[in-house]
Structures are given as C-alpha cells and as structure tokens.
Image (cartoon, rainbow, N blue to C red; front, side, top):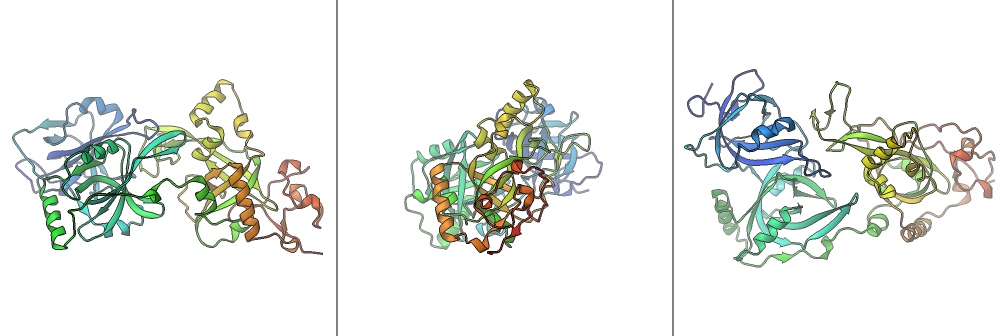
Length: 498
C-alpha cells in the first residue's frame, strides 16, 4: 500500500477493513458538538485533519473518552495517529466527502510531531452555483470564499423561550454568484471585531465548515454551532488567487460595505399568517395537489390521549429508536448520547363546518404551555399523574391559526396521517383579521356547506341553525372515531340545498 512517508498511510486509501492504520495528519479544526438547548454539555469532540496530499478526514471522540484526548490536541499541529477505528462517514453534518471517518477508542495513540509541517489549510472551496444545486439541503459542510458586499445589524430572534443572535452577510464569489450567509451566536462578536480593523475596500471572507440552509425560501449558508470558522482577509494562496480573479472580472472592490436594509428584519407573526402563506379552510386540505404550507383557522375540540404526549428525541429532533437495545438515531445514523423529551400532541380542530386531526410538536406546544417538555414531564411524574397533564388538556376550546405543512414525505419517525403543525398564532386581533379575509375570499353558501356526519352529534340531514357549527366530539352521545382519510381528515357529508 502506498505511503505518504515511511511507515504512514494515505487518507485516500482508508477503508473499513480491519487493519492497523498509521497516519500523519495536521489538525485544522477542533470543535465540541452539543445540542442547542444544552451548549455547555457536549456529547462528542470532532476533529478535522488533513494529510500531506491535501485530503481531509474527520475524527470523532465520544463523550466518555473526551477527557482523555481534549487537552492533548491543538489546532495547527501535526500528529502521528494510530490504533483507531475506521467507520462509515454518516450523520447530518459531515465535514468531508470521504466515505469513512476515524473513531478514537481507549487504545488510540496521538503523538505530536513538531518537526514536520503540512502547509495545506484543508480548504475545499465551493462556488455559489454548486450551493444552489443543493436546493438548501445537504448532508455535507462546505467551505465558501467571497467578498463581503453587505452586513446587517445584529438581530435578535426568539424561539422556544430562547433568544438567538443573528447577523446577515451578503457575499459574492469570483464568478459573480451572490449568496447570503447567516451568522449565529458567538461568531457575531468575531465579525464585529473584524469590522473594527482598518478597512481597505471590500474584505475577502472564508467561512469554513458552513452548512447549507434555506432562509425565507432562498438557498443560503450559515455557521454550525462551534464548528464553523471565519477567515477575514487571510494571507493564504487561495485568497490571493481569489483576489486576482476579481481583478480579471473587473469587479470593483474599492468601495465600502453596505448595510443590509430593513427588509432583512425577522418576519412578523402578522406577515407569516396574513400575507406570506395561502389561506385555506380545513375542508380544502384534502384537495390540495401540491406540497407546501398554508394557514388554517379552527378551535381545538379534543386532545387525543391514545399515545404518549412526549417522545425521546436526538439533538436533531428525530425520535430515538431503542429497538436495537441501545439509543439509535436513524437520521444521524449513529448511537446517540444527547437526548431530551419533546412534545408530540395530536388534537382535533374544527372550523365552521369541518374538522381534521393535527399534530403539534415541541415549539408549538411550548408556545401554548410556556413550560419546557422536560419540566412538565418531571412535574407530572412527581404528582404521579397517569393521564395527560391539565396544562395540555386545557388546549381544548382555544381558537387558533395554524401554519400546517402538507407533503408526501415518508421519512417521519411517526407512522401518523395527521397533518403537521409548523407554527401557531393565538393573537385575537390577527385571528379576527384572518377570519375577515378568508370570508371575503370564499363566502359560505348554503348549498356548498359540508357538514360533519352523525358521529359528531348531528342527527339531522337538513341544514339548520343548530348544525351549521362543528360541535366537539364529546357532545355526541355515541361518539366513534371518524374514518381516517389521506390527510387524517374526518369523513364529510355533502348537504344540498332543499
């Protein structure tokens, strides 16, 4: 087998065969992986190495071994690494396109090699056109370089009771491809520090280990917590070549960075529920042929209690599978150690004439209860509560707007036909305005009414004042579950005008 130097193997030749591998590698990035909710409790240590041929490989140290290695590795140093396991490169955010990665174990040796230098920075730069081809979804982290043309002020977002800092950066690559980069968390302070430096035209910025995302329907990039690294006007060959390319294309860089205007502000609740998404009635959901999101209005009339109201989730929010005897995440394709309970509650929602089943997850339930799932679960166990907590049963009777998602995605962790809720609005003024708008768009006519069947407590087949409103299932004397249809909608009966 070919060697990079005497006694060492190439990263290109790594495979899953049982073999004693010895590598000479430069550590170019080191970061701790943790859940957003628990940033101070990492569950793994990740490292990105590059060999003398410029090929990168990712290495992982699980939580129970972090204390053994975390203080013995430094970014930028070269190490001889041996006695590790070679495993498939899987997971939601993969730092390289290599088929394999290194997994350190108790016998792994990593020895500093100070007399050897590997000048390569391990950058694998991609162009804007390649990012756009991903359509906002990629398993792989990327390296991107461009000139900074615009920066927003620092924005503050609120999600699940947590405040998140955000800054937007507009960038252009050497082929004039434009892209927007969202910077979250502590990297904002790094950008602000760069902005205090003496300026000489538009700066070159490299974001290393960025993730591809969708921001307001547009493909963009953002930093990954703890992993991403920013290089501002770096004096490296890649940046020099990039600047020369800008000159060839006659791109003007001797100008000031512009301030991204207020149209980059966070979208308001009113805009989300009244302007940016189509309005639909519950009865229209089954007839929609295209996937997408829309806004519906209704009142919660029942909380279904046949299943648990919580589930154990991986940090990626996918349900953890315990069927193999250990916690496994099907999305991350690995055994998981960072888990937490999250809400999963199915409800029946009625509007003026129809009803359907919706399923709400953690963020939506939290906005109604204002108690984290972990806290409510602990409180319920302390009270030895067997059924659903009163905080959840109190959902019944609440009139809300729901942003729901309709799609044919079969990758969900839950075998359920209920329509998924992605956001809710309980502000009375917005609900009132929504009802006026949808009434103007699709006025109800008597001969177009679709009424619920007798199982909802309606015994008459003629439209009267008493059955023009959808009654809660609990009002029916002999209530039986309605037949599930394609999207979990209640079976309907068409009533013609007499």
